[in-house]
Image (cartoon, rainbow, N blue to C red; front, side, top):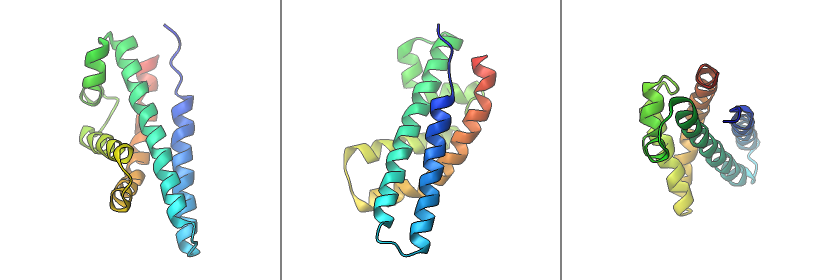
Length: 136
């Protein structure tokens, strides 16, 4: 069993925060790049969400001896039960948003997903604060 590092998730969440700052800047300056910046923020959200899921599943398997199938299927509920996630319902929403972005591109879907990214960042930061107690 190798050491579980949180660094990749820290960097991914920071990248999402930076993209949100770039979006605010673009909209304040009426930039024609606003949609491109929004789409970049969505891509960064996808990466951060995937890393969150992979990291939690790894912790469930390695630290709590869950079998792979159970960890993959019930990662949100199990992580919430163990105190890794404060708000399972929000995470189910983030997972659904992540799944919507990967199946089609539609401007309305993109805007709906983008609207959740700020809440995702808060929840991902909370996850990062809670995880050290579970990986020690």
